[in-house]
Amino acid sequence: MNNIKKLSLVCALLVSSSTMASVSIADFDASNHALAGSGSANFNQFDLTVDGVDIHVSAWSDTRGSSPSTDTPDTDNDPYIERAYDLDNYRNGWSVENLDERSNNCGYSHSADNLGSDCNYQDYDFFLLEFSEAVTLSEAFYSWAYDEGSNYHDDTAALNQVSVVAIESADIEGSTWGTIAGLTGTTSDWSQLHHDSQTGSGQVNYNHHYYSDIGSAGTGNAGNLAGVYSNVWLIGALNEVFGGTGLSGNDGMKLAGVKFSTEPAAHDVPEPSSIVLFGLAIAGLFSSRRKKLS
Image 1 (cartoon, rainbow, N blue to C red):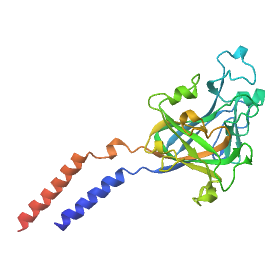
Image 2 (image 1 turned 60 degrees about the horizontal axis):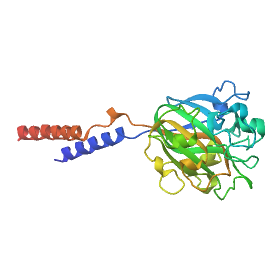
Image 3 (image 1 turned 30 degrees about the horizontal axis):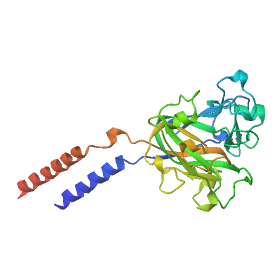
Image 4 (image 1 turned 90 degrees about the vertical axis):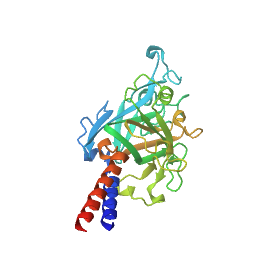
């Protein structure tokens, strides 16, 4: 009987180990990757591969008007999403310069932000992350954060928030953030930025001074995304259509990386009935062996 118990324990351990997903860190520091075109005008996307997973990162903002020929500065005539003009690498993270910031000096071109003090409207900058297989995010890292009013993120108080969104398609051009938020299959929530010294969790080892939790319990940890796997993710300056009512308007950051896990393959997780049958077969073999010996 002891042998049967031991074999049952081994089987349980094998099953549990097969369901464990490995955790990977995608570091977006340009010095770690060959990013063609980095530093040049119209550089708004790059690729990298981490632990066998291909990742395509691009920058987007709601700066496309319904009638571009009649759009004028300081009017909210541009609610539609298009590629941002430029990505700039700074302090191991990436800022977004959207078309309004380039032409009309609206917002802040040194971060991905939702600032609008220089305009009569706000643009929302987002990073679109496309993975070659479904992943779940557990953290995002930022090399720098900006809070309108105090200029820099306070090292002891979390003032900035981001939106984190899992979507089914990377085809967002010409849509609106509100439309995306309402699509079936979209899951979103807001996440609070923290300085790494607040928890001592080690992000400073990656030269990323701020981080936000994703998918864990607690307000501001994007808890709605717990256990959500998707090939396509959005991370950007807080937009209230994705959650976080009353918190947007003063947020800016430079995205430096994410921590992700791939989805366990279906064949790695045995069906419960198969496990039971396997256990019964082993038990039967041992029972038959004992009878023969006696």
